[in-house]
Image (cartoon, rainbow, N blue to C red; front, side, top):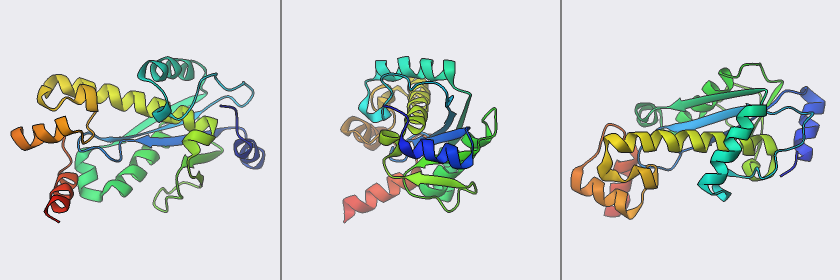
Amino acid sequence: MRWSRCESELRAAHGPCLAGVDEVGRGPLAGPVVACAVIMPPDRRAIRGVADSKALAESQRNALAARIRAVALGIGVGAASVREIDRFNIYHATSLAMRRAVGRLEIAPDHVLIDGKPIRTLGIVHTAIVDADARCYSVACASIIAKVTRDRLMRALAVRYPRYAWERNVGYATAEHVGALDLWGATPHHRASFRIRQLELDLE
């Protein structure tokens, strides 16, 4: 991946410190939604191999995350908890996680670029591009850090809750995970709102 034309245009219009922002964990049955904001140095070439985190193997993501952390001008990670997801819904919880990520950057960005559609509750002036994690270098970097961070968290939780195979599914609704939920019930890290919706769909 290279710096995209859109990123170059945004830097020219707003300033050199462009923060790419992405989130991971909208869909799982368990665990938080995690967002990351990354400001990559505009005068350096893109790191070879950076791509949408979903298109990379775990070993590739881990190696690239280390390289991104080594050269980034700023990295901020934010999350919204299961309790916040159930209270506010996943849309608003994702917005909250992104705001926290941008707020934890070591330097203030000149502009923010996010993956997807504009988020009216974000409270930050931003540009949104659908599939930016696959098209824009800074957002791809953010997606890698967010994915690595969340996966490590879920694997740490798997040690405390080994019945749900989070070390393999990181909270997503695999057959193994759903079967364990049916057998053992939910943990405090399961999203009650997601489970209720799944039961409604099953009944329908």
